[in-house]
Image (tube, helix red, strand yellow):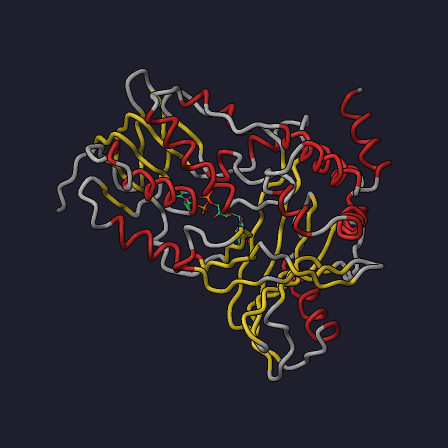
Length: 384
Ligand SMILES: Cc1cc2nc3c(=O)[nH]c(=O)nc-3n(C[C@H](O)[C@H](O)[C@H](O)COP(=O)(O)OP(=O)(O)OC[C@H]3O[C@@H](n4cnc5c(N)ncnc54)[C@H](O)[C@@H]3O)c2cc1C
């Protein structure tokens, strides 16, 4: 039987994007070199369970595992169908499995890090520590970072709408060249909206290989067959490709909400990643949003500040809230919002805004590019 201590300075629950980014950052900082760190996950992370995309200018910290990157995106609405050069941005794709392998490879050589594949059943906090029970062990820790996400808390309130970005994706291989390998289909709204915000998202890896995702921004999930029918129809009719094989599949649901997940942080437990509300509410993009928050968290820990005082709320939260109010009250109008934006603004200005790096003037200009009456109505409803 292995011997390992059962008390740790830090326990990270979940070896997903946030857990592994945090562990990586801690183990690369001398401040934590004497700290004992336990990473727990119920899953061995040996499959390519997801594909992460994000955009950035120039080179970045994940470049060694970037599987493919593009400098062009395509948008299609009801009246607009246009390919855009997004330089100086690149749209980058990472395979989940490459990320897990790379991070585990480094972490397993760190003397102060223990990795256990056990399901966490329960954890609770006392004045002096957090006690944690897994399927096979009991641990204690001074501080716990939790990335187990649940919709429960957000769904039990009504102040902030909770929309899901839900999708099923097929990695397909076609018998003839179908895709422009140079261009990501960012949003194709030519599919029937059926009272929701529905679009196709296509990440081509070559002329005859792509990940095609049927995506909705709406409250409720669909039956599995409905996503699959929509994918098949799109591939056979819009892409005009009756002969294809499905090489891989992925599916997901990402929360889109301004609900304050940080209110559940305590003296010793900090929720991170999606569980911490780090998914950008208006887009669901979480990977880069998490990568940007990790250094802030590291500085916060090093400064000895209380976990409960860590906040990422800024003025973009209000913009996100307005969009989510619009999508929640008029889910069928989502395509008009995005089409209007792409008609009036450059993709660079939209990406900069979504990155929360724009100036107030630039933000007003982006918002002005949206259907005004929809946003004004949402604003009045929110204020009244
Ligand atoms: C298929 C898919 C595609 C996505 N694509 C993108 C994208 O392109 N760009 C983007 O920005 N975001 C994307 N997201 C959203 C987001 O980036 C990911 O969900 C990301 O993985 C969130 O990181 P996380 O650490 O919060 O959660 P996760 O990566 O899901 O990590 C949580 C970990 O906790 C573990 N866990 C859960 N319960 C327990 C338990 N009881 N005990 C022990 N371990 C447990 C899980 O096994 C998992 O490893 C995608 C999400 C999905 C599902």
